[in-house]
Amino acid sequence: MKNVFFILVLAILVQSCTFDKKPEYLGIDNVWVEEASSNNITLKADAHFKNENDLGGTLLTDEIKVYIDNIYIASVSSEAFDVPAKDNFIVPLTVSFPLSKLFKEGNRNLLGIILNQVLNKKMKIDFKGSITYKLAGFSYDYPVDHSQEITIK
Image 1 (cartoon, rainbow, N blue to C red):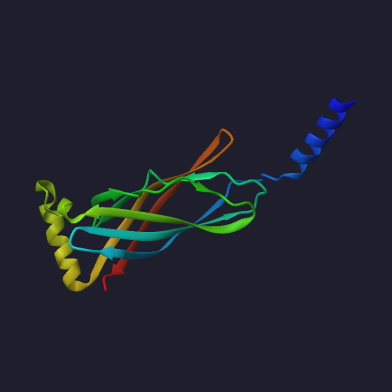
Image 2: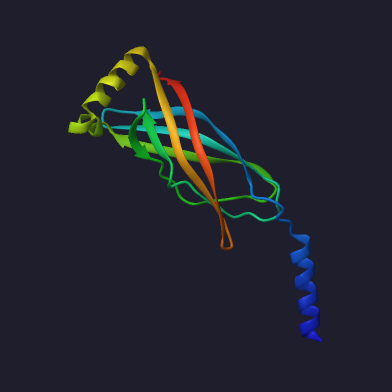
């Protein structure tokens, strides 16, 4: 009798949770320079999502690469993000890179581009790659291809 009751309760719980579709990726915006020092530059951005399901999941952002004027700079670094159920939410994206990277042999052109952009006070930032959604063995990649020109203050 206990087993029948347990199975009945479990079936009701499973039936009441909805997972009709994956969370919706709405895009990236609010790209800004968080910090610009003599040693390091930190860029931040917001990735917007909408989850209409009763279940959450996890988002991983390790596959996003950042480019300045079409030249690869660094990859986004962040911890796994827990997706809230039935909510609109923002996944913060952060990328930091040392200024010394600009002086490396292969990036001499990049230094000129950045100096030019700093003098003009504008830079074209590209985020390219994917954000991975995972839930109980299921995974889905959201393609990311966002360009934005930012003003340096």
